[in-house]
Amino acid sequence: MSETGLKKVAIIGSVGIPAKYGGFETLVEYLTQTLEGKYNITVYCSSKSYPERLAEHNGAKLKYVPLKANGFQSIPYDLWSIAKAIRKHDTLLILGVAGCFAIPFFKLFFKRKFIVHVDGTEWKRDKWGKLAKWYLKTSERLAAKRADFIIADNPVIKEYIDESYGIESVMIPYGADHVEKLELSEDNKKTYPFLRESYAFSVCRIEPENNIHSILECFHGIPETLVFVGNWLYSDYGKRLYAQYKDAKNIHLLSPIYDQHLLNEIRSNCSIYIHGHSAGGTNPSLVEAMMLGLNVAAFDVGYNRATTDEQAAYFADVEELTCLVTNNPVNNAVAMKKIALEKYTWNAICEKYEDLL
Image 1 (cartoon, rainbow, N blue to C red):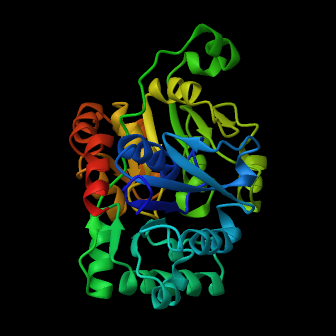
Image 2 (cartoon, rainbow, N blue to C red):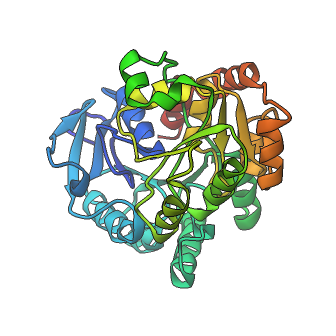
């Protein structure tokens, strides 16, 4: 307990707050807002992402680790954060399993509550090599066996965790009511003149499991316009696709947009949102599209069907996506908005986290 009598909680595994991007960061932003005054919260942040380092935000103390929070550095980043937090906090909320390999060790010396959000099946992602996949799978197993609570963000992930490890995990998705549907401004129409016409839209990290290659191949063969936002120059995969499609007249490949107002303007006015994710769980970009009331076409995998209550349009390959875009116009925007309002609001989600704490 802290001097104020409030339980001390450390939040570990996000890039940090104030939230700039990402599902975990937005989650931490709303958790600290909701729980301010109820807990003494410390959030561990990556100093690499915050040149200006605030001491506090939303009433939470901010501590900085001199490593990146993502990629291969996520493992030492999480381990460093846990080691720093373990002596001074009653509860550790760990987002992702990168540092969970060490939970059994810390449990030997400290009686602390560990709550772990497993963040989908991270070890299945194509970007990891064999050793990294083994490490992440082992960390997932150790988290499931030794943490006090496991959070899954999707019913399919919950079923996998429960059946694989013989436990009862807690299902808590992401919120999306922070997004706002906006009209395109005249200035942005001038900056991006292709937005004046009907266009499909997608935004994500440029990774193979997000099926970017299939989406681009589809639109390269049809006249419809596609606007795609992503980190194209981050990997060989992205660079190759960017070089292949950057000159296509109907395909517009935009660099990452961290201005949420601009991003909301662009995606709010698309005719259809294309969601190609095939890994993970409840993807924040999908629930945000649903909350904006967009027509959604999602890759046909159990996670996406669960997120959208089987009411989106689904595609498994280039041919099926082509059919959805050209021959079978998607019209599920009202259903997507209704589901989002019922399932993906931050107040309800933060209440579930507070129950665990």
